Image (cartoon, rainbow, N blue to C red; front, side, top):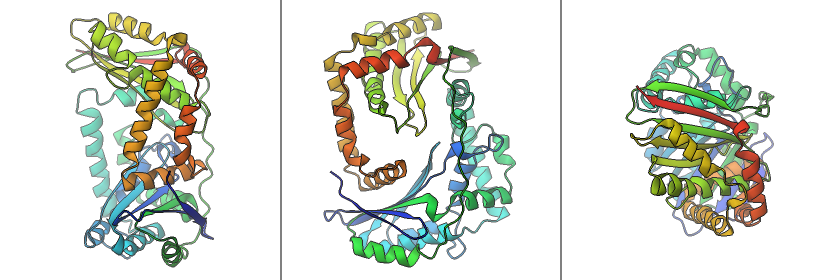
Length: 409
């Protein structure tokens, strides 16, 4: 059980406080409700680029990192399709420094052409290194483009293509900041060796003066129900052929989300999963195989990715894969229990980390119910075998699939 208190400032900033007297540290997480899905289809990668710009200094503080390190703190950030999260951890005695730093860059970054050009180069190199210059690097780019036809989940967080990043101008990032980086579009979580009343005082001191802004109204195009299987084949210089198959699944706010997570775990997480046992241990068709879900707010994907052994054709491998996926009502109570235990153990392990607790509190608040951090185990326990069979039959249909064949040259 993660205990918390919450309040909201007049400018709309939602604040969550998690007191942990057993810690000597404090964690601060600011989550902005903006991600890659909020971008213009012709100017993608902007949310991730802006994350980089947030560390370039604010109008009053030249170096965020240097100021934080001076008081024994460290920080990181990430951008997803749905959110952008900034988090730091530092000695609790120096907590106010984090309030000073985070409020100042929320109030106004030191945006300039020189800094923008530097970060554009950094992101372009990241794009090349992660997506273009390593084996299988562009698989996610290709798969999302195949699986989605309308929804902005069709491009990855880093963007559709390098040219979109190259063409970003200073006025573009300024407009992005004005549209999304406002207190009324953010959640602040303070966790660890902290006290509620002290957090209230510092929040009032540092964040209350920041005015609310009229943020961009989100009207995202929804993905239509897929009616036919989609397939795409590419050839690349890679050591082994690979298959990437995705199925559309409900989003985080759906009642069926927890059944999907259990199905995914039973199918493809760990060496005892059906995919591993059936395609590596029994048939030796695949060199590696696994499954994961994208865990997005709007309907996402269940993805199965596997690399095929050299002596096995893609046709053989796919036929064997589809045979394993015809699980339907064949999943057992033991498999359901094992999947549930695996997820619950992971949740318990992750909750040990203070920064992770702060992040989970922020995301749950963004979803509309902070207490989701404490109810996940109950929701998992309420999924019956009948519901697991239903979701399996509903999702793992050929007409709901998009498959990328990654062939070696």
